[in-house]
Structures are given as structure tokens and as C-alpha cells.
Image 1 (cartoon, rainbow, N blue to C red):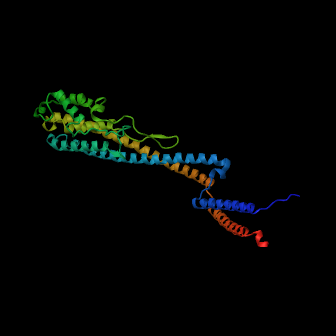
Image 2 (image 1 turned 45 degrees about the vertical axis):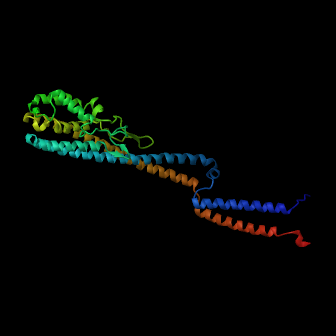
Image 3 (image 1 turned 180 degrees about the horizontal axis):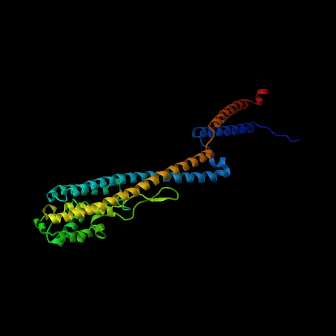
Length: 348
């Protein structure tokens, strides 16, 4: 027969351990009830912890793409709005040129329109969103198009130099009236046109990159999400506005005036077609981004539901367990208090 000795200290220690265990359980259940999530996910899930970690990582990855898609959508919306303004102005100016082609006395009106359109083209191609230039390609920190209205701008200086080299006079010289249609045609198709082609375009007009922004819109899809100011459409529009505003048109011979107008109409036509094409491409990309975001939303909802199944607790069950644990803890306190009041001295 084995005799087990019972001492006051052993009883006190057992009571202390019981109280600590119950208090720890109450704390754990209280945290779970307030957060709705298991107190120790790894301990509770055991071998399924790896599944929870993998699902949560995939959720955050896809959710990050959704966030970047929202940024890409904003960039596309701003780009579309800017190009729509450019397109509308170009179409209006084309109508004006066609209507006034036979009337060289209207050159002042046409010049004022051309100057205004060039300013709008420059403004829209230099559009910023969150500090980034939308039409600068990957050079988002650089203003893409030089301001032709600034006499010190490299494109203005290059245009003045080209005209002076070709004809030996400036655009403001009344002697431009002696320029023949054939000479003007040669200039427009030669030195003037070269200013809007590489490498002159990149040297004097544009700081944009030909490489445009590419956005990942899903785990397996990427799309081109911007347009560069170096697109031929914008070069053609800039050429049309330049020739109608800065070739001394108010002093040109009527035949030479028609030569300039015809060339501007040609450039406007190709420019308008090009801008329309770029808007159509961006429209397709916008649709792709929207569809991708919708698919990702469905995927993240499924992943989130699975994570919740693994990591969340049943609040009703947890509430019942917490109330039970609190009752047990109060009972333990009461029993411990009575046991600590026991003493052999009471029976001597």
C-alpha cells in the first residue's frame, strides 16, 4: 500500500496552476471572440497551417494586382480624355482648313487657330497623373513635348533655322511672298518634314520614350497601358499646326498658300486617323483590365472564404465556451479560498 502525503503547499500549488490554466483559457477565448480569428492559428490548424499560409499569400498577390489594375484604369481614362480633346480640335481645324482653302485672306484666322491647337496638343501630351507624365512612355518623370510657343524652345529654334537655311529669310519677312509653290512643296517634304522624324524629333521636340508602360492585369496577362508622344499621329498633328502657324502664311502667294494648306490637310487626315486608332487600342485595353479585375475579384472572394473557414472561429460557440470558462474560473477561485481557510489548528 502506498501512502501519498498531502501538504498545504501542494494543495496551494495545485490551486494556483488550476487558476492560471483557467485564466489563460479565458484570455484566449476573449481574444478569439473579439477578433473572430483563432488565437493561435498554427497550433489550432496543425498540418493544415501550410495550406492557410499558401492561400493567404495567393490572396495578397491577386489583391495587389487588383490595386494596380485600378491605377492602370485611371491612367487609361486620363489618356483617353486627353486624346479625345486632341482629336476634337484636329477635326475642327481640318473642317476650317477645307472651308478656307480658297481664301488666302483668312490666313490670320487660321494662324490663330493653329497656335491655339498647338498649345492644346502640347498641354494634353504633357498631362500628368500622380506626378507621372502620361504620354512620356517609360520616362514618366520627364515632360514629353517641348513648348513651341516658347522662343527659346529647341523645336522653335530648329524650325526657324530650317526655314532660314532653306529660303535665306525668316518667316516674318514679307519677302516670303516670292516663295513659289514648288519651292514650298520641296521644303515641306524635305527639311520641314525631317524635323518631325527621328532623330530630329527626339532631339528637339520630344523627351518621351518609344517604350510604353506595360501593366500586369492578372497572373498570366500583361497589356500596354499607355501611349507615347512619339506616335506618328502626334507628329503629324504637330507638323500641321506648325506649318499653318509659322511659315509666314499671311504673306504667301495664293498658290503657295494652297500648297501649305493642302499639305496641312494631308497631315491632319493621317493624324486624326492615327489618334482614332490609338484611342481604339486603349479602349480594348480598358475592357481587358475591367474583365481581368472582375475575374480576380471572384478568385479573391473564393480564397478569402477558404482562409476564413480555416482561421476564423464560430462566434456563438466561442461565446458559450467563454461563459463556461468564466464560471469555472469563479468556481475555482471560490474553492481555492475555502481550501486556503482550512487549517489543522482549527481542530486542535
